[in-house]
Amino acid sequence: MSDTAPVRLYGLPTCDTCRKARNWLERFGIPHVFIDYRAERQPPEVLKAWAAQLGGWEKLVNKASTTWRQLPEARKAPGSDPEWTLLLKEHPALIKRPVLVTADGVVSVGFTDNAFKARFGVKK
Image 1 (tube, rainbow, N blue to C red):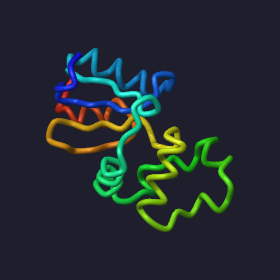
Image 2 (image 1 turned 180 degrees about the horizontal axis):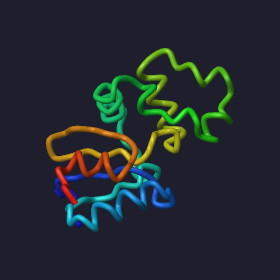
Image 3 (image 1 turned 45 degrees about the horizontal axis):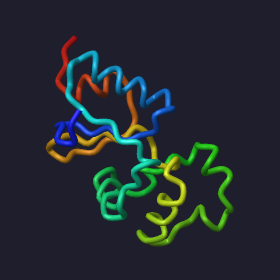
Image 4 (image 1 turned 135 degrees about the vertical axis):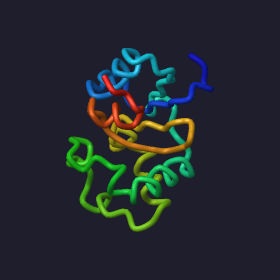
């Protein structure tokens, strides 16, 4: 698959939810490329754009994760965009997954069958 696929799915290859999302896209014939964001760290401007589009850093970061719970308390209250981007650079597993970016630049996080059907206009 090329990097020019209309859909980019970011996540971790071992994540069950990411696998489900990838399988869903395959099943419905939606061309996509999968990017392991642990192996291919996203630049701060991309992370900031995702957070802005989703409604803030709180919507991008998985605070229910083991990684978050293991952080020192002082790291759990980033006060600026650079602090958030540094935290996500150091701990990419904190990013909710998967992150879906369509050709029109619209960003969403997570996967459910119904949400993907609505996003891609699938009636099945």
